[in-house]
Amino acid sequence: MNENHYTGNLTADPEVRPINSGGVVVRFRIAINGRRHNGQQWVNREPIFKNVVCFRKLADNAAASLRSGMAVTVVGTEVDDSWKPADGDKITRTVIEAVNVSVSLLNATIEVTRNTREQREPVAAATN
Image (tube, rainbow, N blue to C red; front, side, top):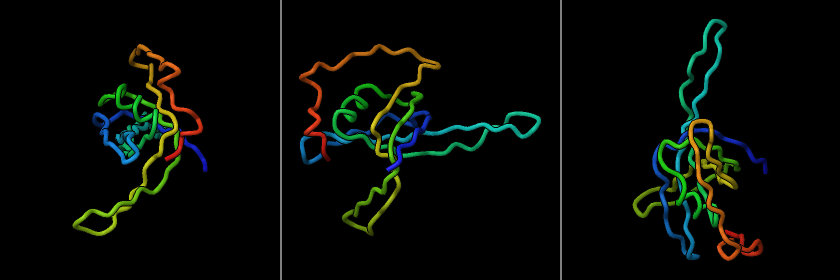
């Protein structure tokens, strides 16, 4: 599958939910703002909104680090996310399944805290 890069701002704090395997899944939404030149001046485009989902260690780090309004770049693949609520029909929407999330340093500074080797997830255990 092709991985794409999406740069935008978080529209709200990430939503953290536990999953059956004992880990968490983190979901957030980004607004992608674009500009174009119409020959005489720069014009703002309507924002595009993308839903993002993170799993495993990326989910843990995203939950601890990301906040509403932050500018981020998400690397991931668009996939269909489907579920059936108890009182309705099946719902399907397209989400970005992230493999990496980076904070933009254009208008902010960050302090990096590296995870210790014990906190990192072994590669062999990196399955959904």
